[in-house]
Length: 392
Image (cartoon, rainbow, N blue to C red; front, side, top):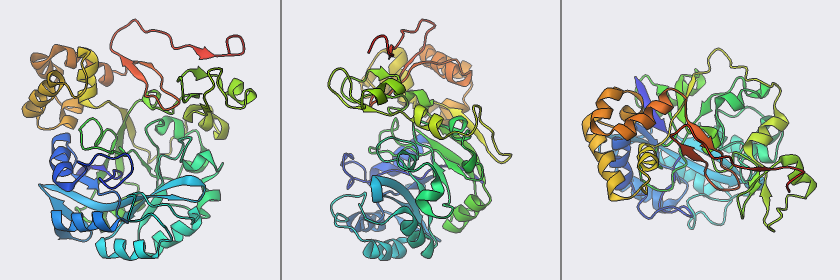
């Protein structure tokens, strides 16, 4: 069975997460999105585990079901060097036992616990309990594994189970790094709210024998990810090297010469694009034979917002979004499967925006420094100036 899965989200207990990140909200929004399998997030937080247990029915073999959506226990952990890791866990009893063993002072405060363990120690703990583990948003400049290490093996000591690409990277970028040729790539949302423009904004299509933890683990081992869906990397808020204060894009070499300080006084953050270029082995990607397609898309509400020049949460955008969901069943079906002519009959502007994505004709002002990129559904595109030696 082919399943749409988002393995990395957060609960209401994580810092900067919506108080609405509860199973009773996540499940129906996941169904509207078109997700069949969702990670719970925050599975080392005792309070969240209590909520998961009360809000779901245990379907067996690590699967917890609510409102027709299946959940698997997952968590993100901040370990040594502030590197973030994603762990997929077999069941609640194991999650509680691992939480008890994890050396951390903030497990009851933040859904994303912090620990002094290094990557190798965390991998050993995860594999002791038959968990799956890999780096979260591996290339991001704040907490990605490659922001500190030049090799994934320097971090973990041995091979982890997957690599999460993050919103600012995709398969085409990651497959310029030779050591990643044997890894499964995941594209997950890292959602902090249940809004459909956050939940499942990146997801995976994975082939499973059935909905169970055993099947998930087997699919990872057999590299049965059939497709990755996610943002165009330029839209990611850390894609380009840029100032975190004024968001001006800066040539990376100039940034280094100026000790990562912008002329406005802000701090310049190295972009994912440049970081990958530093560690890349190839100028062009070399995809292994098992690598599935990577399909660029954008949350439906954000497409509607862009083409109608209205806020994502405005009544206009939400009305059009709901009309399309009611007509085609889920957001993923609207974005990928629905005939453009049928979408056009309901909203011609949205149809045009979706067509641009399907035809790979989108135009983007790249993001960086913590600011998301901007997409333009028209031929004329304004130029985002990159700071060079002449204009710094």
